[in-house]
Image (cartoon, rainbow over all chains, first blue to last red; front, side, top):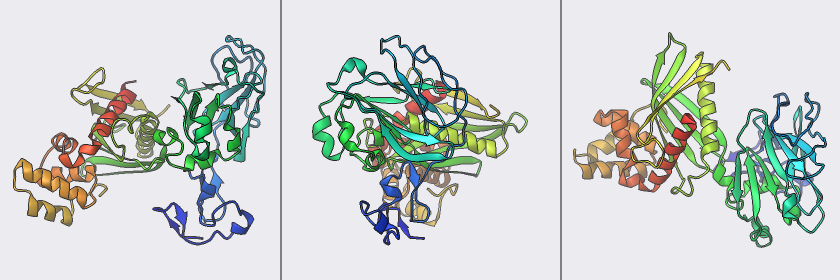
Length: 328
Length: 88
């Protein structure tokens, strides 16, 4: 057991396994992959576990067949695409929330697409890439889509980004960057291959992966109540902090927890630009609030929230009244 | 975050020593709370407790406080996004 300094993000004593991992600093945390792994005792990192079954449903016409049961991780199938990608290979991957993604290996080119490989017991430790021939052909850019319950692709489309020493070689490329949970997918990244299999390290380098850190996923949540109020403190991967407070009202014959007139503050965003890409974090917060209500024995969570007057939203000043059915 | 404590001895002392019932001293008090390490939410709860304000009244003060001006745009963006998430 080693003492961990949260301010430094490092352990204070040498890793007992340092000799076996000479490429790491002996004081590193979770293999420098703090987003996808934890390091409970200071020895070896442990990745997320996945217990959710494979999501079999899918949409669109690009895939002819998706296996109906979970029996591994990467599935391969052929399909015809409406965008003339020809025969493609579809790979299904799941993210930390158990959602499933399809990644199409559309044709041979210089593109690569990265994905993490999981099985029933969790992250297998492999980060695979598809290798493509040159020259790059934009018409054969890899396509990522979601299947199952997630309808909207949670993608951040960016024009170039910097990854440490790679900034000069990739910054002038137009590329799409898909960030979901602790996963990172590139589309049209012809020179990214030299990155190797250390995606998680880049996620660890705050600022070096513009956008990934802005997204910010929840790393800790504390919800408490008292004095007729419910309050929550949420911390994100990008070191931002969100606090919420609402009046607690129990209604519907005790079946509904009503968080009335909820307000929220975020700290460390540094203005509107930095506050972009909050959706993922808010989704996580709402999920935690629903879990909290469910743990308290409620069947419904009702949130009322007054939009800011004169805001740029379509309904400034409007009071939002949302009820979540926790039995679903 | 003080969790659900609305105030504490330190907050009470800051209010007692600095707040005189006018806008200037209120802004100064909020600034001192921030400098003492209290968050926006801590300060909001302190306002509710020390000045007997409603949550909405205290929120308007904190949201527009000079001491927290650097967070205002982020807060407005957050609230827009939160509203969109709930209405969507």
